[in-house]
Image 1 (cartoon, rainbow, N blue to C red):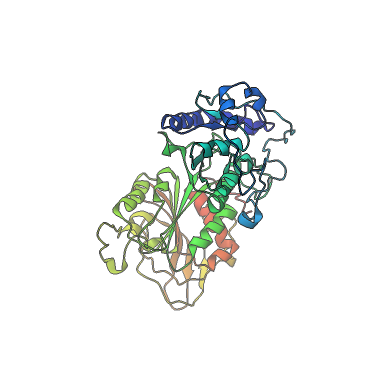
Image 2: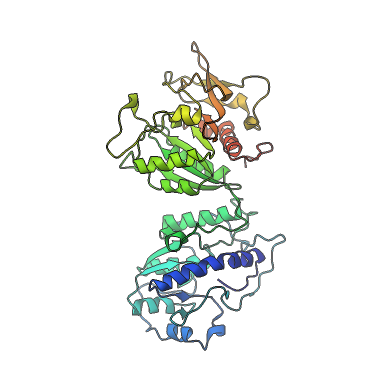
Length: 455
């Protein structure tokens, strides 16, 4: 957490984050944690301090894996980073000149007499000398020092330490003009996900101090929570892949997966309390009352909802069977929330032809080539829709009545709703459906749909 960086946006974000980080550090210190400040390449500034002396006097120990000055990406273990930072990661326009701009740690973060200061393997030696196995990492940048330095994630994990990153107390050197061409903060989210998958778990500052999770002022992305718990259409695979391709420029995304061993458990559902938009792909789950209350609380607050395919029968068992003890059902979720009237589906195997009702296509259809849109799953029986629902796509198969397959609705809670009974695994392979779903999310979130790019 340097006082200054050659990247002006990086300097600005460090200054913005530092007050919250100082609160976190102070609370950890109050609880008895050893605070090790690691302002790399600035130790001359601290050479005569007791905190520097404390780190230097830790006994050197021999390690099976050498503690390097810099541990670069270990592709055999973690593959490649999900962002291209080969340009240095400066998101300034024009790019900043690379030079040593730092001279010390940012002064906002207080250094107390009992703390230590180092930027080398001394950090690990100090931990070992005190019997410390558990390490919470905060600071910048995730794709650089936070992963690579001898006092941080890769090397401490390889030494056997129990490491955790506070994911809202970090940043990334990433330029959105580089692949995968997403919002700067989405780039940080992607590296955090990479760390979670390959190195260590994460938490947030809220686990230590009161208040909300920290977000940079530039992070105005609407937060989409994607809730997935169904066995038929593999949306636990298709939705994250679609989201990675289409949501990263404008949205922050959280993926909530059903429990593989307990079909009625929705771990991580508390993320809804911080979300702005809910995208539902759930089929016949009856979660605990507390978990379903979280869903109810989100919807009753009038927040936007997007539903695909089985969302029409998300929180009820077949034939209205009662849920197990301690669990809850929402039998009227479809009419209450989505404006539909799901009563089953027509036979499998027939492709669903798609047409647009009326002469004025809804803005959600902007850029959607409806002539290439085909329903690959069975046609749902959803009539009659709520009176105020607006069908925007109609589906048909031979010798049966037509059915709405996409509509908009404002429900009794004030939620802006987009629903489509499309969402079969084959639908996600169609560019027209990919664009339709992106437009539906943008519309529900209150963002303009016209001119939406699908790249």
